[in-house]
Length: 322
Image (cartoon, rainbow, N blue to C red; front, side, top):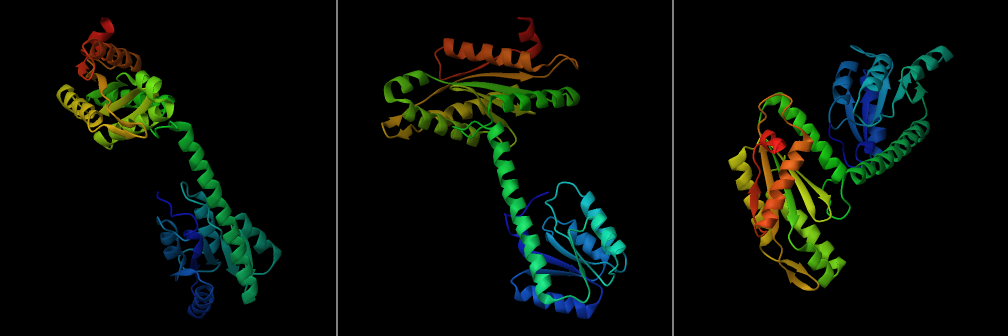
């Protein structure tokens, strides 16, 4: 489920209320305070809205409503998974302590008894908004940490651990489906010479640009990762040998021209690529280790044959027996 930009949903309020006059009063107050107001005349309509991709995060729910009451709405909302938190304000004419406990136990964050003061409502809404903004900040930090844990900081590609996990996942999927699975092992030719003669800052520019070109030249459902140093792995699901070879040639050409512009002037780079296309003869024939071995062997052959070229390994089970 997609989320709004931070803060957007905090400015949207759902008013679920079956009393037309009270709905109008709440709408006018909230609108005058700058909130975007969505109206639901009963609990069923409110529940439908709250399950949507752009559901308001500040629902004001009347306790007594047709189709579904506010307490049941609270219970269902708290059972939803994959959503940002909703700050729920429960509104009712019930005023005994047992009712307050029942409402809060169902998942309400706050409670107002009719009739209530307009300033009190505004203060409670602002409290909810502060909590939701704090949640947005925590989500941004969490997402940033997740990204950093799985991505290479220099190139922005998947890091070694992540690309190997993705390869393992694709191997498992391929074993169940029997479809082709391709793997490319890519090396930037003579990259050490760039670092030695131009410096590491220029080398970093070349690495980043080469990574960008590689990522741009493959399909959006292929996986590109930095395997280590100037080596990269590209996992290519559902790609037979002919298509994999054509894809590798496009990849090689994308990095070879034009030269990478740096502060030290244009730097020309080429790629050596070892590829393997696997169609296992049996459910246990394919493995990450065999794929990596086959691709690495093909890469070694590409370097030995002059670099700036693509070499293909034999089938994984044959390579595994070699």
